[in-house]
Length: 309
DNA sequence: CGCTTTTGACCGGCGC
DNA sequence: GCGCCGGTCAAAAGCG
Image (cartoon, rainbow, N blue to C red; front, side, top):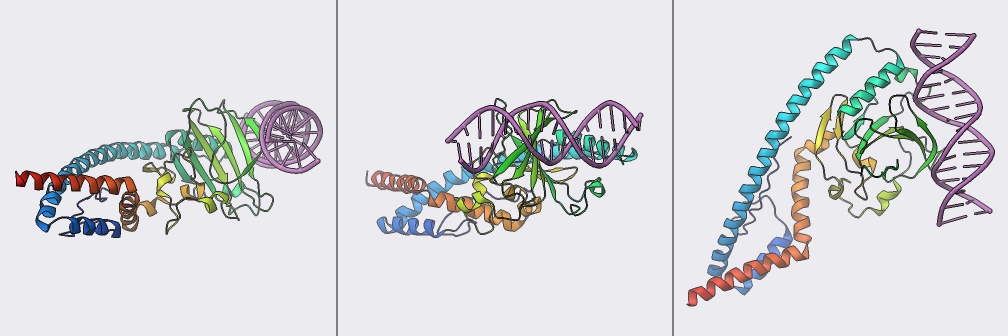
C-alpha cells in the first residue's frame, strides 16, 4: 500500500501551502473575512488550524499504523503464495480438471477481489475455436451470510439458464447469460465459496459488446469514470494477478469498475484525484460548510468578546 | 400473456 | 468403452 496519500486538511488560505484548493473554500474564507477584522480572523483561523492540524496528525498516525500492519500481512501472504506456487509448479497440471481444482483452491485463498485470468489460464487451448480470446474475470463479492440468493448486482442484466451442484462445492453454481444474448456473448457463473459462505465467486466469460445499462444512471460521472463512492475497500494482489476487493452490495457499482486494473489505483494521478474528490465532496456538503463557518464565527465572536472584557 | 426461473435431461470432454 | 463431471438445453412452473 502506498502511504503517499496525504490527508492534509491544512487549508489555511493565508499561506496556501495546502494540497486541497477549491473555489468553495476560497469563497467561504473571503466571506468570513469581510465580516471580521483581519486580526480577529487570523486569531480564530490559527486556533482552528491548530485543532485541525492535531486531528490531521492523529489520523496520519492511525493511517501509518494501518499501513504497517497491512505491509506486514501482505509480505507474509506473498511469502506463502510464493512457497505454494513453487510447490504446485513442480506438479504437472496439464489436465483440465486438475487445473480447475487448483484454481478453486486459489480462489478460496484470496478472499475478496477481481482476478483477470485471461492470460494465465492454462486450459485456454481447450476452449472452443473462436473463443480463444474470451476474457475470463473472477470477482469475489462479500454478501450477507443469511442471504442465500446467487444474485450479483453488477449493473448488467442477466438471464439464468441453469444451476448445478458441483463436486468440490456443496453450494449450487448458477449459470447466467447476458440478457442481450445472443448479440452479447458474455456468460457468468456464480457460486458461494466453499470456505466462506458469505463470499460469492462470480466468474465472467467474455466481454460485453454494449454499454452497462446502470452506467447511464450513475449518480457520479467523474472524469475518468471511477465512482469512488462505491469503492469502499482496499486493493490487494493475488497470485494470479491484480485483484480488487469489492463490496458489490453497495448500490451502483458495476463490474466495469471492478475490472479496472490495480495500477490505476496506485498511480499518482489517482491519488491526486482521490484527494481532490475528498475535498470536493466535503466542500459541496452544505452542512459541512455551514458547520465550519459557524464554528469559525463562534470562535471569532468569542475571542472578540473576551478581548472587550 | 410474455418474460424469467427452475430443474431434470442431455451432451461432450476427460480419466481410468 | 464406461462413468464422472461441468455445462447447456428446454419444458414446466412461477410471476407481474
